[in-house]
Length: 81
Image (cartoon, rainbow, N blue to C red; front, side):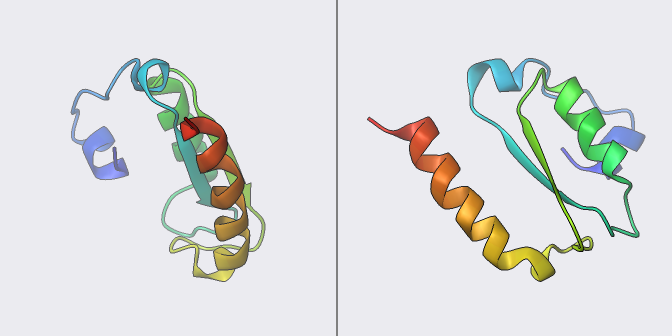
């Protein structure tokens, strides 16, 4: 779900986090969307994990190493056989 769909009044995927693992990333220097937008998304889908990346902007390119490390830990822990 994007901010555009939220502001357009589209229905969020309620309960999504109850059906599948969800990991959200947000840069704390995002000048397009405040981190509160990702927290709102997390709440609307019923949970999930939100990681706020220090020093990262909207595209998160500044945090590529942190993203990679986090995903390498998170994905196997949620999708292991």
